[in-house]
Length: 226
Image (cartoon, rainbow, N blue to C red):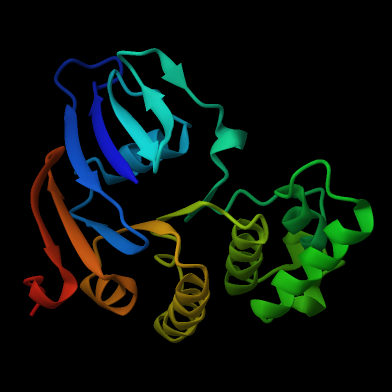
């Protein structure tokens, strides 16, 4: 995946102006920087939730966004798994229904249920299949959100600090499980974080971002975390 984006501040000319360029090969690329550096807005632009002012986003030969050529692929056609801290589970749907929701509409009902149960099992929350989100603990809700993201067989994965609200023990457990899933899928993945431990556990390369600009790109082994 190649990312070239210019994102102007919304409504405030004194706000953060983002101008970033980086590539995301198969595997996990960490977008690392302090809060307010522009990481989340960059991720939202890749997903198609935010329209950049200039730039280009492409996955292989498929162009998702090109301001100059006026190309803007709809979100559902990008088939991106996007997981963030607020989770955004549908409160009126069971865990299985939440997971199945992300699947293509032409998948038969029985197959949707089977795929949902498969992913809930991989995330060790199959017992929640018919329960509603209001009954979930924070860790359970995060596992359901991750199951939904991976159920769609995504072409790219975007993780926006999805572990930040979890306690240390649960975070370590989920990081390990997500790492195993990402290793199996081997799709271009961007992890947004400001936590070195998360970056080192999941990442293979690091893009450092400060004040809306890329300051450095390096392999994880050369990252100055220690």
